[in-house]
Image (cartoon, rainbow, N blue to C red; front, top):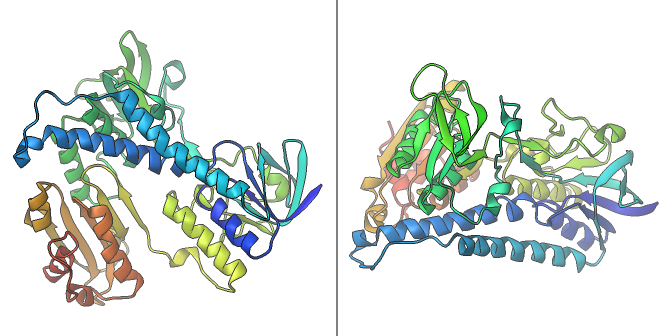
Amino acid sequence: MRTFDAIIVGAGQAGPPLAGRLTAAGMNVALIERKLFGGTCVNTGCMPTKALVASAHAAHLARRVGDFGVRLSGEVGIDMPAVKARKDKVSRDAREGVERWLRDMQGCTVFTGHARFTASRELEVGGERLSAERVFLNVGGRAAVPDMPGVGTVPYLTNTTILELDAVPRHLVVVGGSYIGLEFGQMYRRFGAEVTIVEKGPRLIGREDEDVSQAVREILEAEGIAMRLAAECIRFDAHPDGVAVGVDCDSGERTVVGSHLLLAVGRRPNTGDLGLDTAGVEVDGRGYIKVDDALRTSAEGVWALGDCNGRGAFTHTAYNDFEIVAANLLDGADRKVTERIDTYALYIDPPLGRVGLSEAQARAAGRKVKVGKRPMTRVGRAVEKGETLGFMKTVADAETDALLGAAILGVGGDEAIHSVLDAMAGGMSADALARTMHIHPTVSELIPTVLQDAR
């Protein structure tokens, strides 16, 4: 048995910085990673997908150069092996950087292999037994593959395996009309594939307000992406041309045939093979580790950070988990998960930046709201850049003037949304932000105007 002050399982977004803080505090730390250093973000999430989005955007912009008075001869072509090589390098450089940092970290011992609890705060990895007073689980998640009819009889891609494609599909059928599915759908449409998005619900990205959902649909349809919504009878069958996807029982064409099938229907945590019951770590019905407001599990001395705890499924929530745990453990703080403000982005083009409550969520909570809205066609910066799709929307409490949330679907929306996020975090009222002078010409400068026009 090798004894450490702390054991960290998983080298995702929370594990490595936590190892840095703990070793800097003089602790002897073991970090265990069974596969790829850097976790989902570096290997199968943010970095590779946004590298692909950038390539797709470059192709899209090249096709539009005439709109800007620029002339190019010949058609825009896609060198998919080169696109993939660029994406691979982005991930590889980041992954190798994380591993090098950890292996060179004084006080940190890196173990590679699968970890499993053998007792409370005791784990086995690669035939070695480790123990510590503190154990931190940062094991992440992976694509969920529901038991849909025929799913086991056809080839399919997930958000991980689609990254290995080095050729553009003839027709990509995406099952799942939410964040991952929409990003890949638009991306491959811009690479030249025919794309159909199949969604069981009545509209795309169902957690967003209906006007946001509809605007996103219109943006994607304008690029030639086909939509099959309210597809209650999704099923799969082998077909000579690829995969036949059953999309509807009652109306329209009942089957879509694609050369490739992408399943983008959610995520599940990597918690089923850790021996959590042996350590007394409780999980919920979906396998997520139950944690309190300080990210402590039901087992004494065990914390869960990142995607595996069900308290957020983003790189920034995982990193914030690290910050909460480190501050409470090392700085005498009393930080809580419930203190943070929900914020995220959808990286179609133009992107959607979101913070706080949507209009529907605010009304459902019983709040009387005032809503401001402005199309991007009335945002000077968007007009100058020739990117006027989308709109800006703010939600504030009509009685207290508290900022409740915002959605910016438009060029720079993923950056401009931080103006509202920071104002909310600082306790600013809607009126105070509305009276704040911003730089011209920017997208952010219209946020005060939208608030001033709120009704």
